Length: 213
Ligand code: GRF
Image (tube, rainbow, N blue to C red; front, side, top):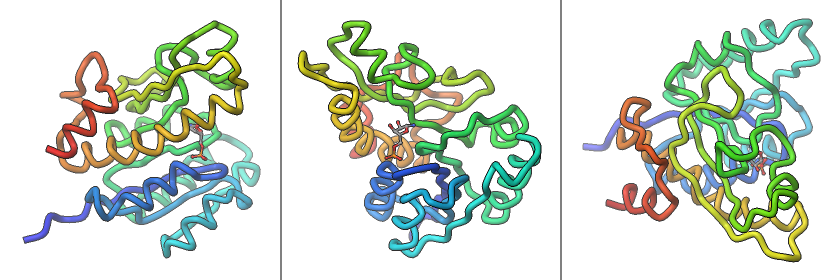
C-alpha cells in the first residue's frame, strides 16, 4: 500500500534553484509540489515549474494596497490546493502575522546563514566582513519574528580567503540544494515536527542519515 502523498506549495520570487532541487528530488523523497506561487511574474522559477508540469500562480504584491490584502489573496490560492506544508524558497516579501499564523506549524524557510548569525539580507557579505571561517544555510520554522523560528537543520561550508559574496553564495547554494529537500522529506515522513525539532539543529550529515534510515 502506498503512503498518501505529502503535498507542498513552494513560494518563490526569483531564480528558483532551490525549487529546482525540490522538483528533482520530490519523487525519490516522498513529497509532491502541487503549486508554485510567485509574487514576480518574471521569476525564472515559474519556468522551472512549468517545465516540470507543476501548476503556477503569480500574485503581484504591487496589485494590492496593503500587505494583508496581498496575503489574503495568497492564502486563497494556497488553501485551494490544501498543501500540508508551505515552503518559502527565495520568497522576497516580508510576511505579516496574518499569513504566518494562518500556516502555524506548516511554514518553513531557507535562510543563507548559520542562524542565529546574520539575519536579514546580504548574509554572505556580512559573513565575510565578520571574518567567519564557516558559513552556510539554515532551514527553520517560520514565526512572526524575522529569521527567528526554531532552526531544523543547517549545512555549512568553508569561507575561503579569496571569497567574494558571489563566490560564497554559490558554494552555499550547493548545500542548500541538499538541505532543503531533505528537511521537507523529514517533515513529510513525520520524522520532524515543530514539537520534536532537535536542539541544537541537525547538521546536514545527521539529517541525511535520518532521512536515509
Ligand atoms: C537562497 O540563497 C535562499 O537561501 C534564500 O534566497 C535564495 C534563493 O535562491 N532564501 P533560489 O531562488 O532558490 O536560487
